[in-house]
Image 1 (cartoon, rainbow, N blue to C red):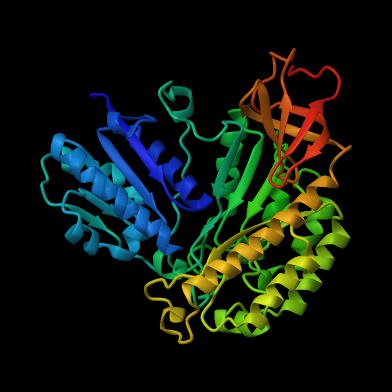
Image 2 (cartoon, rainbow, N blue to C red; image 1 turned 180 degrees about the vertical axis):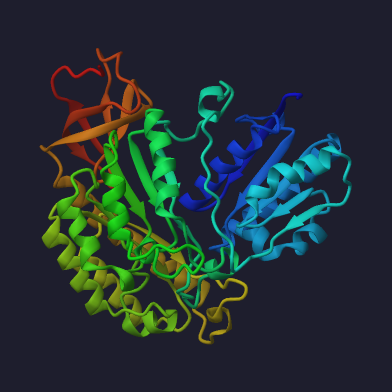
Length: 462
């Protein structure tokens, strides 16, 4: 089998990052080795996101650039995968005839056979974007790839930490969201498949796992394909946490309406569950939340925040905010600013609303002017920066466990705390430190988005 090179460009969320890893693993037996430079690639895969219009625009811009690459190298294969592929389908083929493969979110496992067909001389562009209500996530793990992984691999993420998908799709149909249309209805993986995959990762030296799903809180409760019995997400979390060798456990993301007391108690009762929680609220206005079809109120959300903090006082809480949703008034936005002041989020991901094809909110009236959206977003982010700085200053003087991720500038290492804060610290005299090592670091400086500290004592990896 001749050696070929694969370049994957990933847009969007952690779910897409995990899908890109799976694509890389799937294509290795077909002869593709991953590279970090697009110019070296025989196959370029663009794994796309359509949550926001800006990400979709970036995809088409990159495809325009690749048209020139294809004209210089007709043998170059171009594949569009993910949510934009699922959403646009044939439109991509019509607008971008130089694209060889368009593959949707449920069909990425078909990529090796699609490549084989092209190798056998198929000249028709290949399209696989059907969403199947009976789809089951394959029991995927590659037992041999890691041992054979070539040195040319870009390895964007440290090898000691990995994502594991536990479910895909969503049944909530928030009025602004394309996920039910691009990833389908909720599908939960069997517990045995999840545990088997994690055991393989732990045997390879992985020590930190993040469980992924569009709404992990509803794991196992809405899937008619696989019989999960009475397994809820909290049950799965406890089974994963008990696996030998797992030092840190995280998960994302959650819908507040499905957040159970059983899950909240896990933060107090599971030792290796990191005290970090991403709980998207989207707006501080009940009126806007109703138009968004979020199915909870601000009061209900705040009650769950108080309960979470009663179980885990050191919990670092983050959220998502959409600014300028159709019909959002100055009073609605003021309520969102008040919510930020009340909850004091450690961090947030905030965005201007944009219409997405096929969503109900795309047809809503009373759209907010772009200038107003930009002004509101700037105000929100300025307040969040101030809150984040104050939150981070509370860590100054504390000794925190930091897992090393890599080396930065000026002979500084960086890593993450259990609360998911990035910490920079000098590495002088500590040449035996490796990614994945857990060190005790005393925090001496706080910024808006990271911390700085110093290693306490002599600590080495055994």
